Length: 165
Length: 332
Image (cartoon, rainbow over all chains, first blue to last red):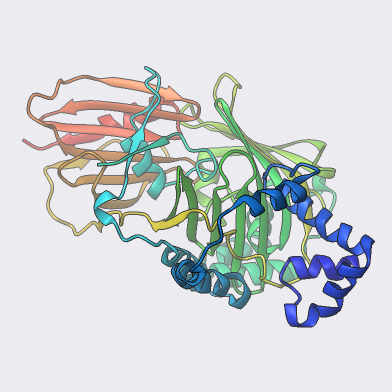
């Protein structure tokens, strides 16, 4: 059972095929606990803050205080396009052995961007630590782009900051 | 005779064919004592590309240390690798052969960069070691344990002061490079990359060959780098006396950040170390300042010569960098 719960969480099991798991989670306390524990582990591994023990009760209380949204469809319509793209990403991404596939993921992820406000696109400014001992970043970057050393793939000598025009 | 025939084979064959043949030759490294050290190094160069493995290595230069998770697969034809930084921002490098795609988190977005590269750890050694043999000598050291595995230490020493020395730890069973350390002439460590865990992969599945997508970040292609291959336009300079063993391996014209005009970029290598030379017209009012710096394993030198700014940067000792800058001679 725990394996199936894990598979469901990882999207390895289609939700249609998982009705028996959902049923058992509703009836079995153990299965329900496994489900929530796996989520907690996942959250922790992703660096998310752990939920407080009374999270659910607190959330339900807060929800009751929230005003009722009269037109939820209006919100959904905005999100749906992004969601469709997001849903397409890992699930249908076949294990194509081509390098193009890697690029496609990048490209699809780029489509997730919602606002095309190019005018406000932030500019990167390569900043070198203002130390007397540093090597001018523009030359170092050009050197590493065309003749990278074994460590330059992992250790970047240049830090970045962003500013808006 | 057998050895020279083999050497010729390596020099003339395509890398894929060499990989295949080496695989067939198997990696049953005999007792390292009765084996030529260069053969062990040659096998390490090939094993890094022709074996499928997974592990974690630590990369250290100057003041920085990063752990990297690597998955490398050779399916008999093509090489696939995914390198994920485990410390700091989750930069990823995916490669197929020499084509790299880097997913580089920069603040609130992830910049996708495309690069060419052939020397990612543990494939730091070139398959063709001829240039390395000319400039370095090799001897074997002790047997040592690295990443829980037995390894043979090989010491690669420069024949002169124009390059750094290296120490390689090579798995006695797999022939794979487990650890690589670069030293300067004072025996200080300049760069160290070492596995701390390693396992061979038996599966040829490629389901791992994709980046982890962060839906909260915007993905952007890096601004196209303006690089024009050298078109043989006549220039007003020549390169005269290069430091021993360094050869020109590439030349291009490129835009450099913050420069209004294209800059000539020439790359030299001695087989292991790479040095870049940049030549550009000096701006009016540019102070003819000479600057020599080194940070970790990288040296930098810039000077003004007959109205041109000559800049050299690379992973070599200062003497080499200065000598390359002085090799540029301007015609009047």
